Structures are given as structure tokens and as C-alpha cells.
Image 1: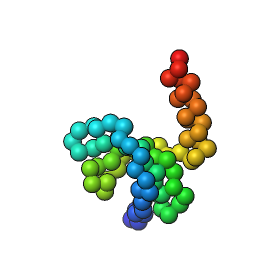
Image 2: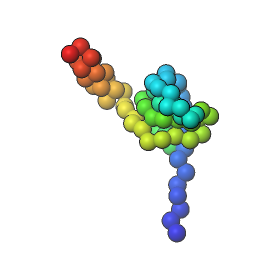
Image 3: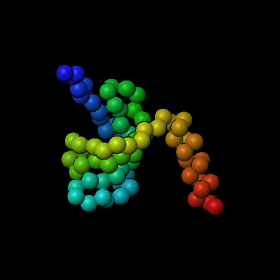
Image 4: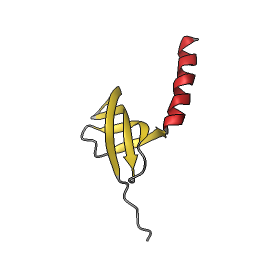
Amino acid sequence: MEDIKEIKFEIVRRIGLISDGGRNWRKELNVVSWNDREPKLDIRDWSEDHLRMGKGLTFTQEEAGRLYEYLGSYLKS
């Protein structure tokens, strides 16, 4: 049987709540360090106690900058 590697994470900075999905789950924007790596901008669902998480998206600073530009264009149209 294959060993399942534990995912280590640290929420370095909580930026904001995007939506409250109910049932104690919330979609949040945070800065998270995964497995002791450089922190990245992170969007995902979290349990209220931040011990469980859903699938999400992470962005480097450069990627977040591009996303910001694209969202600005999209929202202006």
C-alpha cells in the first residue's frame, strides 16, 4: 500500500471572504504556504476551523498580477 503524504500548510495572511457556502464552508482569498514553500495567493473553500480545505487555485505574484489585469478588463466591459 502506498503511503499518503500529509499536506502541510500555513495561512500566512487572511485577505478576505469571497462567499459563504453554508454548512460551515467558506470560499476565501488568502496567502498560503504549502509544504514550506514560498507563499502564494490562494482561492479555495475552507472549513470554519481551517483544518479542512477543498480544491482551489494558487497564484504566484506574477500570475496574480496578470489575473488582476484580466479581471479589470472583464469588469470594464
